[in-house]
Image 1 (tube, rainbow, N blue to C red):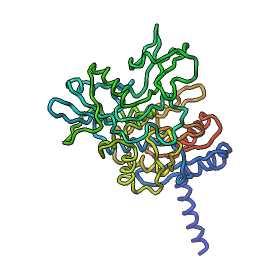
Image 2 (tube, rainbow, N blue to C red; image 1 turned 45 degrees about the horizontal axis):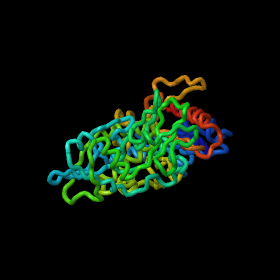
Image 3 (cartoon, rainbow, N blue to C red; image 1 turned 30 degrees about the horizontal axis):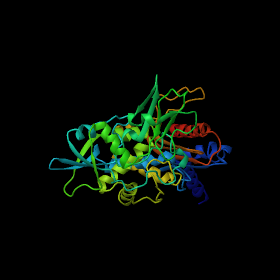
Image 4 (cartoon, helix red, strand yellow; image 1 turned 180 degrees about the vertical axis):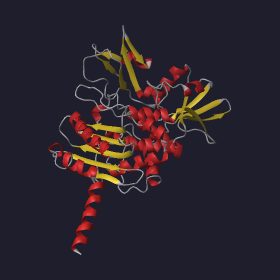
Length: 420
């Protein structure tokens, strides 16, 4: 009897150690005993999407500030709601007049996309009446930092963005502005401020040579004047489109906007993607309509419901757990072909202290998220044996340089890669 008990115990120990290989590596070498993690809050969840096994779970059910890991939820929402091509305009034609309104499409004359779909369409009509008031939300997300009003990464949200809602300034022999409408409102100054807080008065440093982007204040009046300048014709304004069936003008591929949003972590594109999604679901444009729809339908099985307040992750009010991030990553992996999915996610290339790229080819496709004292990375890891694992690695409240956090994370992810 005693021998049988010992034999059974050894079998249990063997399989426990075999199944916990990565767990042991991480606990002894990284998270459990490393002084590095003593003064910060860290969570890591790793799963096998095929077997559904949890390979490692450290604070996986705890809430973290996700920063731009929030964009993973935005990506999922956009892919579930938006059509293959971006809705550019909603319109109705009555007699000889075009009545139109924005959908939140961020690509019109955007510095990167430079899309002209709406302009080409509008130029075909002599009588245009435009509704600029169908956006029913705030210009900024809850908890966005007030001092970022003139930062390139914090443009205002609205129904009919133009130029990415930023003024681009470049200096050659003279200042070149895009849109040119603001040219007479740009002044040389060595002040750290790039724009007046409550006015579209902009400042450019005399030593500045690179192109800079400064958010401008949006309004129905500004949108009307910008559009008239582009079309070279007068337009009228209405507060509501006439009753009747509306048509939709479609623009560039939705995937191209999602990819740009994920690869360069573009906050403006993220916000506008969910604004556009709300227009597909309802008549008015706002973030909450999309959020509530996604949580009530596709993500109603989440065990840890997130505090989800914006689409970009700029707000520190956002709270997500590694489990809730991994759940959405798993859904994406199940629903989107791998070739397409890994194109949408950035390739993560680790560099050594000399900035030499040391992984070829990359084995991580993941979205990073950075705020002061916070760094998160969530996505897909390909192991040396060819397995795809899904992970969410979240770090909050550290005081060391973020490059040190990334270095420690890379060590752990490398251990995982080799263990499977």
